[in-house]
Image (cartoon, rainbow, N blue to C red; front, side):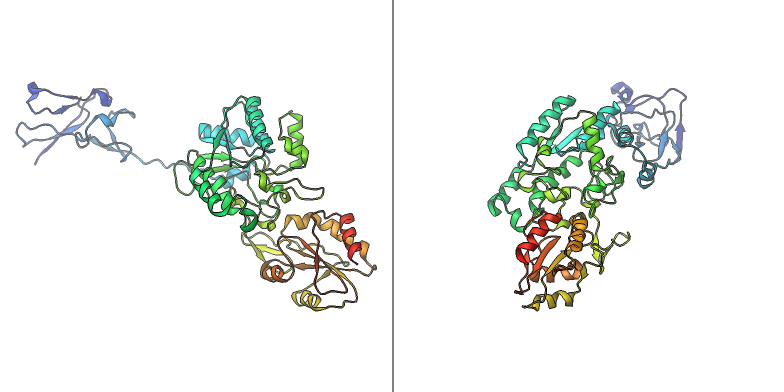
Length: 471
């Protein structure tokens, strides 16, 4: 079978210029196109010329003289074939976001925001929680670039937060893209477990229904998102946040691992500096901040913090400090492994330094704390803190507790510490009333049962009153 290939130097045509010949063209209703490159079976009598178009998207074969853009949908599949010219494959450049994060390490939030909006355009959006992350919106406005904002309306937010949303929309002339939880899932959760089940079995299930799944839907329509995460928000879980990263948990519009990029312009900024910026720019803020709230979430799970407390202590206060994340930033959590006095992290970072390291605080081992529990008539009462070195709330009270130990030295009250993390955690839960870190216990000299300090005021004066009331 012989094969003849004809080509033409005529200009390329669009797909719309293909036509079907009538009866005058041989009566076969064949497809005719200008001679771009076709072959005929020469021994086929009067047969229709058959051409097969090969889409450039499906192969690396490029039609001779063909334009880059053509409407292949108009040409029936297996209708024409072009004379091939093999085109070199061009490697698609993959962005190295770890390198970019290092390059932007010293960049300002404004520079990082501008870079993010420049790279992703309409395929990126700011995740706005209704708290001090309004700074992100101000930075986006300052870039002069268009930007999008979305927020998760869980149905359990404070009235002040809804009022704040309205004020932000008016201030910046934007429409926040609200995402809502699935009504059927919320209904099933509430009917089965009640409105406040999270106080009994943890907040993760409720957050998964009201926050994580709506967020997942929102991110499926994006290629990148911008968050207000900061390293100082939670030293135990967020201390290694980069300014930009491939999102390790969620997927973007293209689907699959690596399809979503996460930007954290405020990662290296301290909370005080964020507030200085908000005041300097006269940015509207949530009125809850004036009532002692720092970290703001849903109304049942958020409360004001006291002086000396870390901002995350106002969230899910009835739970272990390590659980104070809702799942939106799960990929940034540090995985901990207990290791004696200090904690070695699974991600390879250095061990966390031990706390309350002073000669006035006795380090109690497991046998030591067990002996203390067995004694019914102690010579001296004891004040003991059950802690974990990684815990930001333990870290926040270290100075107060050390000062108290120095104050109580020689007073007849012993002060001790017990690392209740890791393998000791279950023991501490069963015998030391541990529910969250830190747990402070007073062992009176007339009873074996310790008395738990009930307040979250961990300043020296408050702890002193507690000790003097029981000694």
